[in-house]
Image (cartoon, rainbow over all chains, first blue to last red; front, side):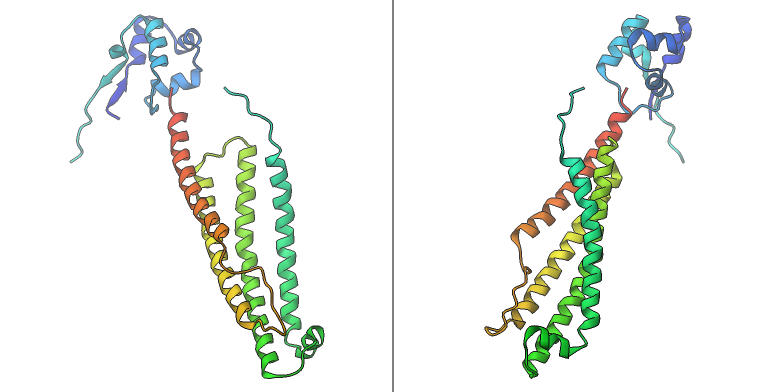
Length: 72
Length: 174
């Protein structure tokens, strides 16, 4: 997937753990881990909204498009 | 999450299917017994009050053919009943929208198709054997409802395959 989730960096900047974030936004740690490790297939707007509110950031700070290197 | 209304359909289906599976094997055993007895023409003629004639010969041959076809029905019915029971169990377990159920329905649909074809063959033989003196009334032949069930099951198999994909998507939605 060419969409990278930058949750790790944001949490590090804000000195927050994944568990704390999970508690604040009311999403299970398991689901948040799926998102963080890039295994999610889709993200709800409500989830994005909650994360942006909790971390005081923009959706663009969480998600980044990184074109995959074409295999030769 | 919406609360599900209680439905007796599943517990009833489970019991009925289990009974039908046993009955299916029993009917298979009965047909097998009939086939073993059938070589004895004397018995059959006595049972049906027939006299020896080419007509009788033909009737007995036809009945043997029907019995052999009836034997083929048993494993096909087993495929349908066993798969349906497995689907019912998966609904009870709370996860019916899986790819396995789609392929189970697909197998059921093919088995139903084969059963409908067999029914037509059996019905045709029965019609050919039937005479005004000895009418042979078998509940077999072309059935619009039967073919509708075949079509419905094939469509449902596709619906389940789509449902399984959607379920997979939803599972990885955060």
